[in-house]
Image (cartoon, rainbow, N blue to C red; front, side, top):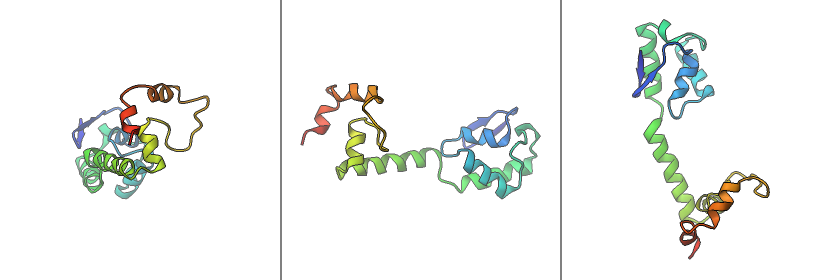
Length: 124
């Protein structure tokens, strides 16, 4: 059993996949971390030595992950809403932000536009 930042990583998973259980680490970041500590991506968690586990922990602790990353993302979205830019307004309306089409898709977002909880945000 390998605990990393409060997460229990499953023993039967490969190290590269198990690291993605942590918020802020995807496949690419996982590969970069494992390249730094020179561990194979396909190695199992149960096969890691204590020294390898300590190396992974040291590298991951330097990164901004979990609650700090969530806080940073939410503050950047709040900033966009405050300056009332297009992306901020899309966030307010619960619409797709990154340029997706809404004519056929985003049905749930369109339904949310008519609800009362969104209307006061749109009024000036």
